[in-house]
Length: 314
Image (cartoon, rainbow, N blue to C red; front, side):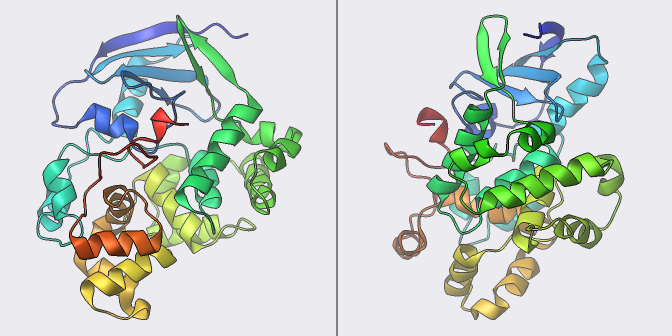
């Protein structure tokens, strides 16, 4: 087993971000335990950060590294240097998100690698919130890349090479037909020298087309990956669930829903798309619409699996 040692340590400075909220959103128990979160700072898992909800962090690696570069990556992953003033101003006037942002102004989106963001997107295809995230949980556990950081245990995401060597574990993870798409994504990453910094300089539409060239990756998955991995929010991932909600709330046809959304949120359209799922606890469509009708449009503190509580159950 590789030996991880502390290479950098410190405390997050400034910003009004709520670290507990950031770390708990769409997370698993092996990556957040209520007190500490574990952030994989590279695709292969050579560098891992452990950060407390109070902001104290340690960065672990098996080899020496540049602390400045990796502290920057930690801030990036947590969205701590992202200026969301414009997003908040719009949200506080919006019927869908004003209650959520008023209650949780410190919410930021935690990012991940492009590889894992695509896998996340595939597992959301034609699946409920619980089904999709259960697939992801199973994938991580079945590939079993457990590591120890001093007295803490956590898991790494499987690498594209892991997937290619043991594709049968995808089927065991309950991914159904999706295993073929995940496998094609793994092959794509090994066949292409993906430079995320170069992608960041490209137009969102160009990046979307590149990602859609992967067999099985469609518009929704590509756009969700743009949001989760690159913090590019111009092109919103709009599925049937969100399309219907937009139609009902803003009084437009479902065909007009995406254009309406972009007209409201502009360059934050993708971030708003994810925020709505958190605000409505990713409820099934009928329940989500019922809650909207009752004015219950912020997370409900209850004993059930939601985007903010799944770490307690999975």
